[in-house]
Length: 82
Image 1 (tube, rainbow, N blue to C red):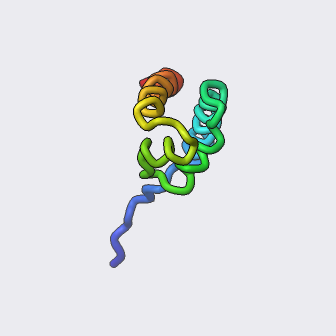
Image 2 (tube, helix red, strand yellow):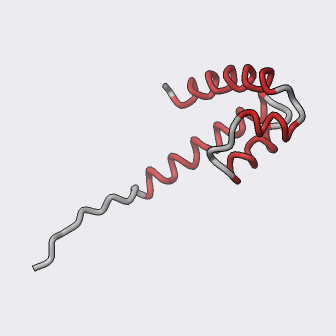
C-alpha cells in the first residue's frame, strides 16, 4: 500500500501574491535608489551576495551602501507588513 504524501507545493494564489509583492518591493526600491536595477540583478544572480560585493559593483563605499540598504530594507519591511 502506498503512503500518501501531502502536497507541500504553494498554491497558485500564494505564488501570484508573492510575485505581486516582489514586484511592489522592486518598484519601491527603484524609487529609493537610482542603482536599483543593478542591485536587483545582483540579487537575482546570487541571492547570497554580500552588500560589500554589490557596493563594489555599483562603485559606492561599502559602509555608505550598507547604511543605505539598512534604511531601504526598513522601508521595504513596512510594505511587507513586518
